[in-house]
Image (tube, rainbow, N blue to C red):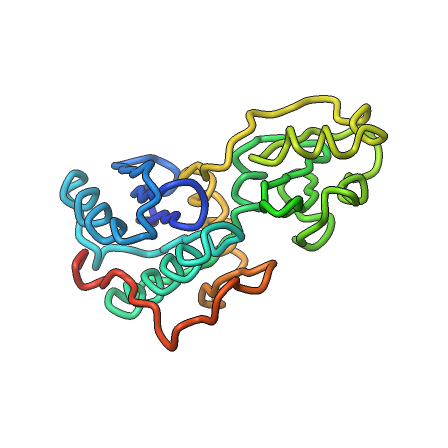
Length: 228
C-alpha cells in the first residue's frame, strides 16, 4: 500500500494527514489562519503518531488554491521540497476539486467559494470530473456557473450563489454541507487515482485572481527538513 501525505494550507486553516492507501493513520488540523507556518510541525507530529518516517512516503498531495494566497504558495513549496528530500511524488489538487470529491456526489455538482469583493470562485463537476474550468465570476453573473439540469451545490459560497442566482437556484436539488475546509481523505483518493494514471506534474499555486500587492521575490515556506 502507498503511504500518502495529504496537506492543505490553501483553504480553511492548515491540515496534514497520513494515509496507508485510503486508510487513515494520523491527522492534525489548525483552525486558525496561520498562513501555513504551522504546517511543518503538524507533519512532524503525524509521522511521530503513526510511527512512520517521511522516507517511506510514496505520494504527497497538496491543495494549490484558490483560497489563501500565501497558503496556495506554501503548500506546493513544502510538498515539492519534501518530495525532493524523500523521493516521493508530489501532486497538486485544487481546492475546488477536493471539495467536489469530498461532497461524494455522483450527479452534477457546483462548487462555489466566497471570493469576497462580490465574486465567487466556481467550477462544475460530474462524478468528480470537471465539467468546466475553475474561474472567478462576479455575483451578478453567478447563474452562468450552474451546470445543465438539476445539480447539487456545495462550498463556502453556496448561500451567496443561491441569493445571487434565483433564476437558476430552483435547479439546485440539494445543498451539500457548505464547507470550505478540504477533507484529507478526498486528497488521498484523488492522489491515488492520479498516480495510477501516471500523472507526474509537480504542484504549483492556482490563482484565479491577481494578487492585491506585489509578490515578494520569495515568500518563506516551512522547511520540509523539519518533518524529515
